[in-house]
Image 1 (cartoon, rainbow, N blue to C red):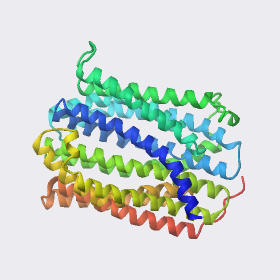
Image 2: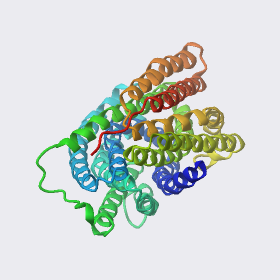
Image 3: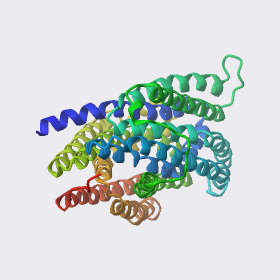
Image 4: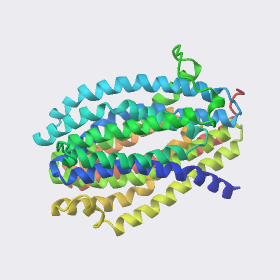
Length: 446
């Protein structure tokens, strides 16, 4: 029985993982190409990325509720619900994107007051304002992606994410360096390339979904929209806490970038390199987490509590196993990986040390990410939101400040604080899942 769960979870997870890596690879390519312009541009990309995602991650969290709700509907053989969830999810995404776009564009000015080097701040503000316009296509792509993944179709988004890397690289090459007669825009060029690649992703996936006969039976109509119904309210009921979960986590890691920026430009560039690498392995676990959400949601919809436990446990085991391997590889290649980004000796030295610390928290990072996904699959979001706040802001932040600045460990101390937060999050979230399924009851009939 567990063998079947491993096989089914892996079959779902692999395309999601590849797609997630494809999306993350775009950021890695941006950093690598921008890094050739100079340390200031690479540091600005780090600051901008942190500011951008600390805000937009709330939207990503809200939209993430679409997958478990669709999966539960599929498990309970409720064919009418997926189409209604899609329509409501689409408009929730549009409204959320409009709000977040305004916040990011006008809020970028805050970077001036975050005690960053002046040249870094100017570059970061300009770049942030450009990519603020990519929020709508980015979140709409995620909306379509979450919907079809809830139906266990995980490959289309993977293919499009991989293709988007070619689009992103091509426009980066033109606009960052001024090739093919285009002006050399540096970091701003990377921002325009990001916008164009995200438009490509949304248009491609929307075209596929609306043209495919696989989804036509769900009646995927966007208009007319009469406001939120019970499906829209359910998306928000699950999505808003999920958004705050992501906000607390990403907010803490974004703040860590600002704290590293107080130490110096080289430390911030090193932090950006190490975070790019750690984010890649983390997003692999997010793919496993998505597969766990789908499998757990299907089992919950079918009213099979024992299968809920098996599906969730298998997803967590897979996440732990992958991250254990990742940690070993990071230790082995800690001095080689930074060379993909820069040749500056001081940056290489610091980045190598940070990758060693990242290797130590890999298992905890992966298990907490998967635990959040399987908890979302059983519609458990309120307590995990409290847990993420405690782990990152009440435990991780004080630890980072204490180790980094009071005990003068600098960038290493901040990363040790990050490690402590991930350990706390992992222990509490996994405990919550296994406690919750002991008390789980069958869902009400649709």
